[in-house]
Amino acid sequence: MCFWVGLMLLLSGGFHGHGLAGHLHVGGGDAGGPGFVPILPLMVFVAVWGGTGYVLTRFSGMNMLAVVLICTVVALLLGCLMYVVLARVMTRYDSSMNKMDYEQAGQLGYISISAMDGAVGEMKYVLHGTMRSIGVRAETGQQLVRGDRVIILKVDKGMAAVTLFERKIDQL
Image 1 (cartoon, one colour):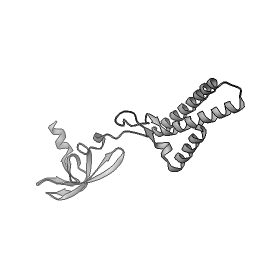
Image 2 (cartoon, one colour):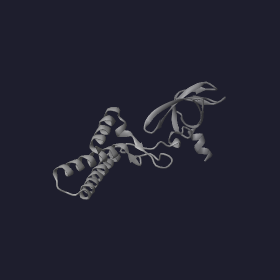
Image 3 (cartoon, helix red, strand yellow):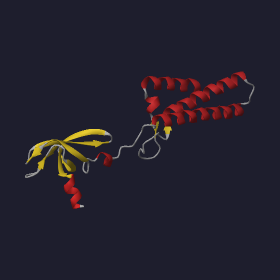
């Protein structure tokens, strides 16, 4: 019975997709990475335990205690192997997102479209290896010429307040 239940769970998980990604948590919060009890290795454990138990009771003369022990050891080994494989595959390229990694304030970039005396321009900067652009507004009396290196001070409604990089360096 355990073999058929485990096999049906494996097949339904493969068709519906919840077998590979699902996991059960014990306790509060998700710290990222694989869950405490992944569903796929649990289903593999049930199927292997039932299948091994059926084969050993049907075709060997072992007593029931020996069959249960052997089935448990074999199923645990295969379930743990499945867990290790999934943990390595699913977390290989996983990196936890940190809000500070995507903070725009403090980013160094350059002006790509000039802005003079209250007008709107554009700056480009690199964040996580990707070139990004954002609108900048020149303060009254400020001239942001194409190619000027600037630092983002703050971002408000998609518009960046910037200062010239050389000016910032002189203040330090």
